[in-house]
Length: 564
Image (cartoon, rainbow, N blue to C red; front, side, top):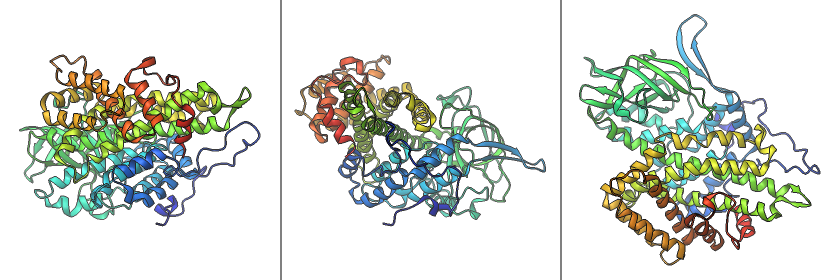
């Protein structure tokens, strides 16, 4: 396979600062630049999990994408796209309302690269066994470097099965929208869909008075004589407003319903969507998130009136998967930079990586990230088109449990990695501050921690098949580690007695997540990694803080495996 280069996606555009400066660290006790590596070939845990979960056939493609994402150029584009945030341009020079969001050229280069790879569509465009896992691996490597561009990619990926489900009732979805969502040519132009080569989809669910409680939405949808609906109201978070359409929820006469709301109407006029402002966010600075008002905006109903939540929940399930993949990528990206720094930096007469306490920290970061990767790709397998009913039942409890747990772990992992670099990790040039600002987002987006844990509780109470599938998965590791067996026994008892008290939902969700990670580690990881995970995460020695692995954990061996 020919290695894809970013400039091939959109021509030979040259950006200021688009190449890494030559390192002057030699002899100055400074590590060489981290970028300029293949993120797939330098990640043993990722390669092993990809092959184990069914994506061995994608090796060449993933190696090529690993070279692109790990290049100095991609890291430089990521830094620039986040330094020069998008700006809202409300009017043109003639005073006409246009509500355009202007992005730095680096954003467009990154988007073109990711769409060429197919992060927004590959499992749907090329369905085969392991397609979801291969796509998850590619998305994870992207997440190690830049996260804002992943928002419209995720929403398009997640919207595709929803629109396909309704294309028989609405044939123009199959004729116009789905083919362009499957296309890999990045086309950011504000044109009617018929005049574009590709399309991206966003989402608008929440409103200021309800947030996660979407049934409290007040936006109204009235059916017009032409069969379309006119939406009037607002959205507090309207993600990626430059997408070609958004899936939104609104109150129709029959109840809360789901609609496809285009940005540009078929006649070329702009839909009545007014961007009030762009959100000034902690992180995710390269991406535009907005507040909008609908003034009788045109939209098309998906499904039946009153069935908005069931229609959009399929999209939400896939976006939650991407939150998990993204958090795992953030953890891996931060941990890899910490290990790289410690391997080249000396203090007090020895390299940092040789200091016993630093070894403990680095090994613990490695254990955490390897477990995250194993959990993530195992979950991705349950999303495959050929997944069994048992796999799908397993996903219904595992998805919210892992979204809660891994998205919570990401900020602490990135913070610890930043501390390894010391002051160097606190400055923007290291990219770790950007990763740190990104880290809390996935825990908040698409259902915060409490929402996820309540979903876990509902699944364990109402779906015996989900509990059965979960316990069957854990049974695969039975006898491999005494601590794991003890933890699974306690978890099994807890699952049989969830009661009516919601206050323990976080303990249950966390218990499920670490049990699944322990089971995967025992079955597939090196013994040192598996033993370290079970000894530190299941017994909770040291309160689960990083850098508290027990004596004899084999820190040097674990670190050595992290970059081979």
